[in-house]
Image (cartoon, rainbow, N blue to C red; front, side):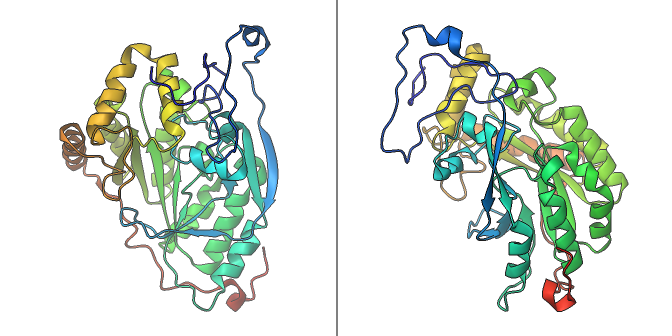
Length: 360
């Protein structure tokens, strides 16, 4: 296995996706493991989750990406306890002097004062209302939300302001806010997208260790739809040689559960995510590792990742085109429309202070 700063022996940690902490690319020095055997008995296979607070200096994150359907996003947390080993957001943890590996899923940052900060930004005289995406760099309904409730408070503010929002999650905790989301839906202020990766429970346990099970996510789609909340699915990521054979079954299951829209994304391996995913493959699916990595390079012009706009989400080449064709055909079969933010209500937006609304 080609190594990019990996430890000599990755370790399986209970309930965690990463098998080690890769080198922080911003750190001035690097520690390299020397296998003298002593660590084999000392390394714990259980790591507790730590949470620290960060005072929010800004709420909205802005982008000018031509391949994203939104230009602003909101992240209540930094890091994500779901522990999805493939998560493209992992490298962002390096900005806080933390590792994109185990630190990303065990050392979380809760952003205090975020609701108040968002309220201020929505009041700016030059603010133009367009849908906010929750979230681009974390899952706003990860386990931490059960106690912090930042996402719920953000939604309460957005409802009061009549500001539209899109939500992407793989957590059933979204059902906690069913009544709130249903009220937003009445005003055309919300769309929810539930991510699906695989229907294989055994694969999910190591790939997305603390995320909801596939059946639980389908139940979330069903209950959201029943409550009148527009719901779709993201088949993301599609992993060539590991999950791509499930595309048709995933779309069928999502449609039967009540999803009305669907989109997909090819596996992305920026920065430290590439060696993390490679180590995970060699640990859990060694017999498939070479094939998966070969197919990834076929979809990325010979590289393990290509960040170019227009290519980073869908890839290129024969295999990537085949995935796109299969997805489009299955979407037509199950009457699933493309993901869109169009149709959400931006006309009724009213800044918080214009309402005299001090509930936050």
